[in-house]
Image 1 (cartoon, rainbow, N blue to C red):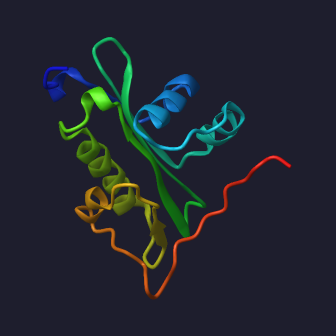
Image 2 (cartoon, rainbow, N blue to C red; image 1 turned 90 degrees about the horizontal axis):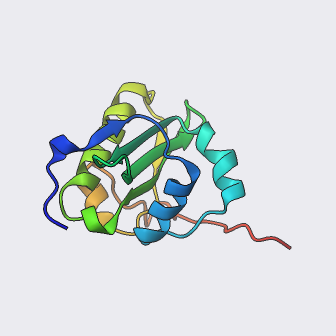
Length: 142
């Protein structure tokens, strides 16, 4: 794919539709999410950004979830592989950080789990260890 002119992209501060959300997660190398989870979770986003190409095809996304006061988590930072390496991840994170700078109260906790930490280090995120340890629990059906 030729280099994208960022001016050709449409930026919307909204969650993508369910199919685009699931596609972007898988295509960008993130773990899949069930349709049930996406239907339930996406409307509860505190902040969302979705990038669309001129054909209105979602090519990037990012969200912030949490309780809106004490805890915030940056999630679903994903860019379609055909559009990677062109600064779209940086653009998404700039908007996420703009939201965080405006909305997060002092001493609140902002976290993320990163597949590619180099991107997030540029935005002031740092490793928690050895003082803290990131953990997760993947819910499975019995």
